[in-house]
Length: 114
Ligand SMILES: Nc1ncnc2c1ncn2[C@@H]1O[C@H](COP(=O)(O)OP(=O)(O)OP(=O)(O)O)[C@@H](O)[C@H]1O
Ligand SMILES: [Mg+2]
Image (cartoon, rainbow, N blue to C red):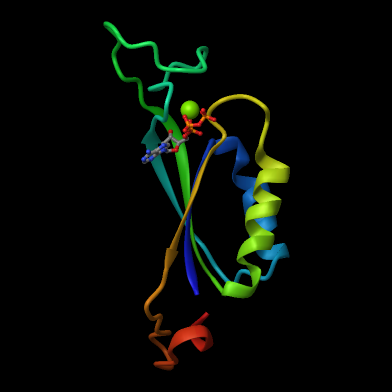
């Protein structure tokens, strides 16, 4: 099992939701966030140029999803294919190994808890 932490522009949320459910993900948690990447929130330049510049945090969405190892590559490929715009700021996906997962209602563990 893996935990996906998908940080995206708010307008990409609908596509990411569709991809996750289409690929067999069973649930997700969505968090409203603020963030910046290499451009430090400057939406026009490709690289941060340094100097006197205030870091600007832009509205972002984080989608947290617990997924089986079998679908992970498919999900990552689809996110790139469907979300990459050719512009900066499309976002990032962090992939974490999950040590264990429990469904509280039944106490099922591991993949059975997905
Ligand atoms: N190193 C990081 N650590 C934590 N969060 C990050 C990091 N880089 C990016 N993020 C989060 O992801 C969001 C989108 O990042 P972004 O796509 O701009 O990354 P980037 O590396 O600057 O890529 P690009 O050059 O395509 O813009 C940021 O607003 C921030 O919320
Ligand atoms: Mg960026």
